[in-house]
Length: 475
Ligand code: SAH
Ligand code: SF4
Ligand code: F3S
Image (cartoon, rainbow, N blue to C red; front, side, top):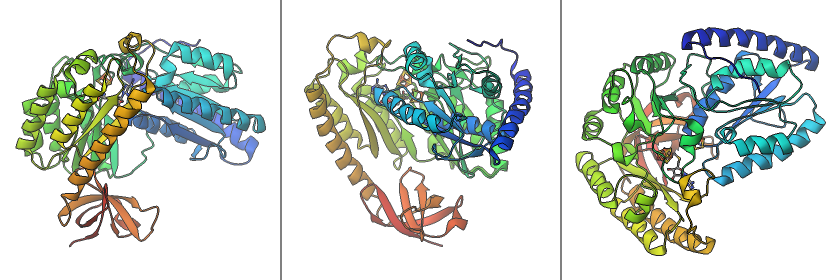
């Protein structure tokens, strides 16, 4: 086990840059041996936080001399940034590790690295040490800023390197980042979660809630805008509680007001909002903003008060519905999406009916529906009445139908309207089209070329195809 003592954030940045230089020497030696630049492949599982972390990890790989590739087969270094929110995420990683083992047998210099949320679980580390001995480096969510240093340790040692921290109070952000899109970017405003919803592993693997200094956030966004970014997504597990624990407390709404002032920034998104902390101040800021997108992701998880209480969500169905009412009254064109879990311990089909009732009343623009997955160590895992698979499946199918019908109806409402879309990419099915994202997060495909990527254009939404539109640019 390698353990490093923490220094202060700025010193840490200097230290990590030194390690990048050292790591670059190792990569240069490998390049000489291979006769070409080594290739690095970063695969991301899970949420936007992990996606952002992966941009930081790829940034360091690129900085020390790796050419980035999306193909594990071509790569000389493969890094999996893992998720453990549901068991199927873990199973996918184990499945792909089997494949990496076969690759490593053919290519002995291949380096395999695992990091992210799954690595914060002791049982996972034990399993990898026992059954996946070919892995070179394991680290968790709290020390990703040490990546360069960990790489050097890996290059200089033969055995598997394991470095998992339980917590950190460090926020080291000014390291190289390899942004996936030049025109939009995620930005961490807080880390961790204090909510302990009874089904959820995130607080255990991401640690306690910590907010970043607002000045640092604003400076980072300014830098991104200077670099061509027009849309940002403020990231946190519960952005509505942003700033509460800072030395000089500030609300999320107040932060948004400051972000709005940044010149050149066109669109602001954020994720995720916990309903219990969504303030009237935030609704007012969203209503008055020219930049905050008309999309709110407001996970409800369940509609039955008994289940909501057992989930420790801290709101009732009625409170949730009245919050939605308040938002829709203030901002009628706000699109609302949600997350729902089916099959929480003790949930009956009558409870699922309550959830369907919420879906019908709220009229979600989209809902991500998940089957409950038992996460060892969470309070819900120890609850007795786990729901039989057949009952879960029946509830899930019924719910999914209501969700899809509602979303389709909502989508169709925009037919014929002209709205602004940010052009994101050339359509991968038809190169004469590009794909744009509306403020409400829906996609629209229309004729244009790659030169339009990153621009915001007015598009007529001619035909609704269920969950997306086709249209044309309007001058
Ligand atoms: N912080 C966010 C959610 C992060 S996890 C929030 O509070 O809304 C993303 C989603 O995964 C959750 O909203 C929930 O619907 C789902 N999820 C979390 N734990 C789960 C579990 N054990 N089984 C199934 N779905 C789960
Ligand atoms: Fe998990 Fe709840 Fe925290 Fe979201 S708010 S990350 S669901 S514990
Ligand atoms: Fe998964 Fe970790 Fe995100 S568990 S959902 S990647 S915070």
